[in-house]
Image (cartoon, rainbow, N blue to C red):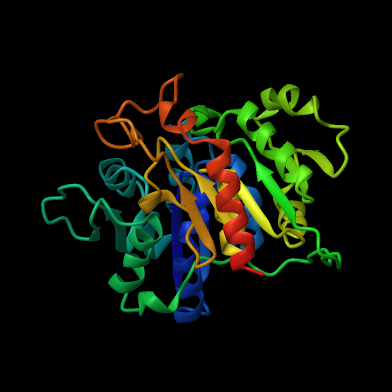
Length: 331
């Protein structure tokens, strides 16, 4: 059986899709898996799943028409199943499917699709993981059996001792900088965590280099580390040592949740009920007095602003209190 998966979203969105991979490998163990990936930076994590017979990569943001070239290169293959992951616009997916030879099509959408075959209808207000898991149900599986996961990697051995280690990721996709909690507020939180006996590591990823200047001012602080441009494999290995991950709405938070680590995710522009970390140990925090425009990352929303009142109105004290509560809960 030949299966093609098309994914054009980011790292976190691929973690959201991972239950489908687990289901497909179990249901169709002798299949060949092909992947068309529209975000080059996501390949580091897709490679970890080690199930692809072929991977084709293009950049949907800068060279979207390269998809036609890839599809033409696959014209000699008739796929038994083609799946577009949740998050891809339905009409774009439908148009793209005309370029691929297949027996069965599966597209997730909350849009009006006029009864088109291959459409998996979902409500717009459910979590992205649940949207992807609807594919499992559509293909005859038990969607509750499968959860987001990361393949096992070599992990560093956690150090013994009573010091809580906090990992902070203050960045996110550079396209969505309006999802970043202010660096100055993060620094206040870091100083208080260290003062209270915790150690803190901050990681700055690709495309987030503008944050280096902000956090370099505390680089030499005892019990503080600043790490830059870790590979996803090294990141996963290091995260295993930490007591809690504090992050904006970003792929790192979703990776940590898939590793079953305690996560606190700070949300403003995005709805955590749809995009929040998805695991029993994961929590989110939003403004106690959310502005009317929140969340703006939605149909009809502004898609961000420079003022970000939805984030600036979340105090450092609120976040520190939640960190303490999560650490106690997960001892």
